[in-house]
Image 1 (cartoon, rainbow, N blue to C red):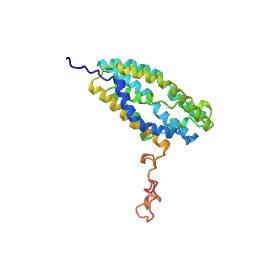
Image 2: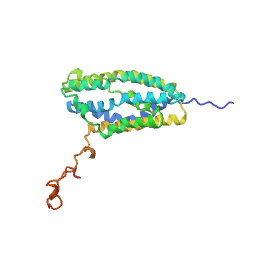
Image 3: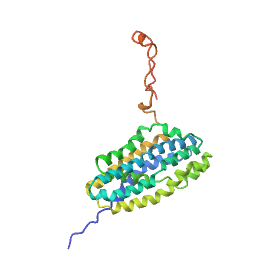
Image 4: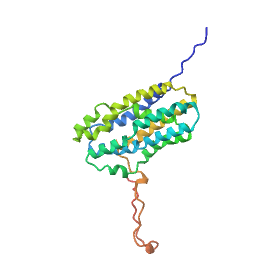
Length: 261
């Protein structure tokens, strides 16, 4: 009797199984994000954070296209057209968030001026490392996380009713809740069409898991504000003139955070 031939698990299915195992942590944060406590201030904070994340997407896709074209391996040749289409589709989404922020009555210039949090920098920066130093394939794991778990259906309408903000303030949220379902299905089909080596499968899964952990870190402070990161604190200041600094018995004042919660 001939030995049974095992059918390889498609890349899309394998990635989905991994992310579904990691999804409960993200779902718990998301549930808290959109609960009854989500009023105008929290929603604006979500818009600020989302803008910081989304404005990095187009540069990542552009870098992935260039890296695929630079390489000569067959996988890169398959990935380049996909990333090029994604680059076109994602163009301008950061502008959507600026418009939504303005519709809340806030100044969109605040979004452009505010530096990203360390968590956002880690989340958006990791895919760039994978692209440059390993393989652009890794970016698909990052994209899958964002497109396979869209905002809950109807959340934009519920927030509009709760906050009293106009519908124009929720256009990005509503659009992604609708669009990501179709985009996610197309990504799943594309992944399943790829023939990957064991090392390539591991890269895809590792990159996706890294992004999943990172997204929890990005969103959690919006629900449970954390203590300020040391890089966000003011540097210590010293009272008195420079000449008296070495002889003064008055303790220098410092604005570093105290250890008391």
